[in-house]
Amino acid sequence: MSNRKFSSKLVDGPHQAASRSMLRGVGLTDEDFKNPLVGIASMGAQVTPCNMHINGLADIVNKSLAKENLKGMLFNTITVSDGISMGTAGMKYSLVSREVIADSIETVVGCLGYDGVITIGGCDKNMPGAIIALARLNRPGIFIYGGSIRPSEQNTDYVTVCEKTGEFAKGSISEEELIAIEKISVKGPGSCGGMYTANTMASAIEAMGMSLPGSSSQDALSEDKKHDCGKAANAIKNLIEMDLKPRDIMTKEAFENAITTVIALGGSTNAVLHLIAMAKAANVGLSLDDFSRIGANVPVIADIKPFGKHYMSELNQRGGIQPLMKLLLDKGMLHGDCLTVTGKTLSENLLTVDEQDQQPLIRSFDNPIKSSSHLRILYGNLAPEGAVAKITGAEGTKFKGKARVFNSEEEGNAAILNKFIEAGDVVVIRYEGPKGGPGMREMLKPTSAIMGQGLGDKVAFITDGRFSGGTHGFVVGHISPEAEDGGPIALIEDGDSIEIDAESNTINILIDEITMKQRKDNWIRPSKEEPTGVLAKYKKLVTSASLGATTD
Image (cartoon, rainbow, N blue to C red; front, side):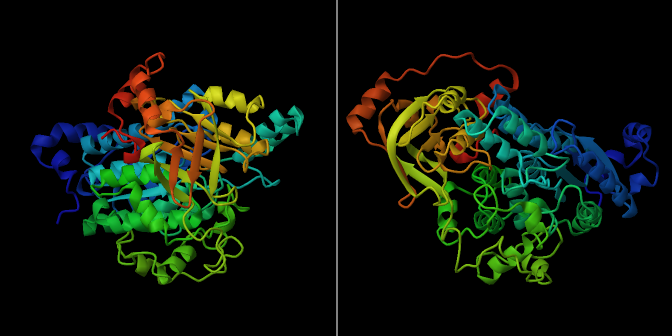
């Protein structure tokens, strides 16, 4: 089989002289036309620490491709920053960026006939966006993670600053102390350093086999990360020669490996949303119930932030997630016969992994942080189509309280910061779903404010929006149907009793069916300014959070 399956159609023969002429204009030679063309999709940008170094990594990839007789074709796509836009209207664009990234990579590669694709991303939506594109294109591809930021010398990070804002609102610290933490907590390139969404998705992709072994835990500023970029060239060459494509790797079993690894690591709720979306692009049937099925038998054993003590960089010093995956494989919890971008199976990749002592970061199965998944899929009269909870048990597993209802994140956050929320309240923030936002904003600011005020085990929080990987506490998101569609969350009134049970996996409003029907009959969608541009397109196309909030 030709290793120029796609590029040959653009550059071979006299009838393609005009195409070759354009390519000569960007520097291609006669020799380049004989070699496979490999697209390098860089998400490098100066807009966020997560991605500020990625164009440099792309250059390493490009130079390495030349040594393998491959011609790299570098292009950029976008990134936004959850951390910068958090709690503002700008956050509406965050989840939208996943779709824009996927669409843009697909557009460039599909148009220009690249025989393989290497994608390089850092911030949260880069990773699922890249994988969705690779799955759609289904030609040899690899994802490279830009790497994790190291914590400050004072062991603080971005999430620390968010929670300190809550402490400031409570009066526990001064503004000067808050700003002092602000100034020291984020230093240099790399994605947020805990098991937040970026590191969660990087780990999921490695477990799935779509990135090189060991790549998900590497520091952004490290020789290991540079070496990882160099190795990608040989790997993509091998994949092209084997004609091993993303859908050959991204099987149902591979997604189950990703879910298992994410649970063991105590990963972000966003993994549920993104893995379902990635699976859809790969034509793999994956649902909320798969998370419950797998999660019933997988413990949380990683003591990593946000609810643990440690950072990803510390885990990297102990071998990253590979020793953990070997442990899971030996326990029969992973499918070892899944193919990976190395051209080998997962079992073959793990065969040479040292069984390093990962204590105290990775606990034994006899002493887990939680004996089953922290990612709980809840159903009930508040979430007939499902909701996603992140409950470790540290704040309990059951909660019953009175609803405090807000129709936007801004309203809810103001109430928390102004100390209007009390122990026993269930904070309800709605009209923040995929359509209602639109964009399904993350609720890190209000949940961090709750934690900072010392209410993490005294207050529950529910929303049709979603959460940052840095969120912890008694929180339930992705409630479906969302308020914008007239889902039951739209019908809650102040003072209603709400019961959440993460053992029976239920979430209910304690009112009778007649009252619920009356409210539904009388419900009127709140009026607000309709979005324009990309947000309007997104609102028109996006599916329910329970289906991955996709626009395909």
